[in-house]
Image 1 (cartoon, helix red, strand yellow):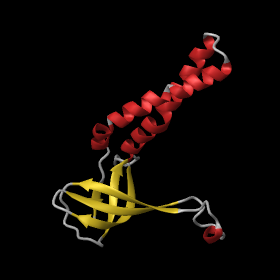
Image 2 (cartoon, rainbow, N blue to C red; image 1 turned 60 degrees about the vertical axis):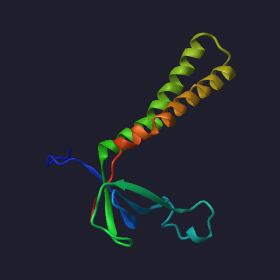
Image 3 (cartoon, helix red, strand yellow; image 1 turned 90 degrees about the horizontal axis):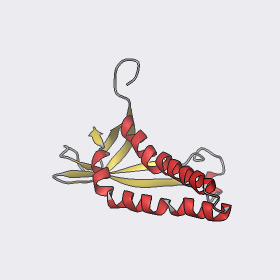
Image 4 (cartoon, rainbow, N blue to C red; image 1 turned 135 degrees about the horizontal axis):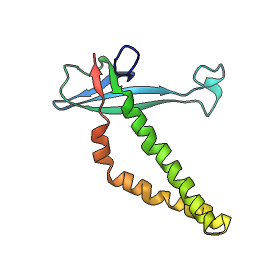
Length: 140
């Protein structure tokens, strides 16, 4: 919550690509950090990636409408936790455990990386359940 007691939100402007009875597909553009650079048109690493977001529910919008996608900021923190922080904790913990058992450094490093394979496999296995928790809504 912010100082006024409102829940913080994340918003992205987008264009409706497809509108159905139970869902809407919205195209958003994700600009890279170097999109304002004067050499952007000549550089291979700059990019403006377009993403398609499926929003569940019935909305009174049609193809081509300009909309704003909204998600609670706490859901964004959860995504960062599952995608970055928890794997980092697992990796460092596995490395410390291996080193404490006098495992050679190279093997300890490889085992620490290998322990992430089951983690991401489990994350992939539960992707539908996780996806249900990250809900966008549309503000027209």
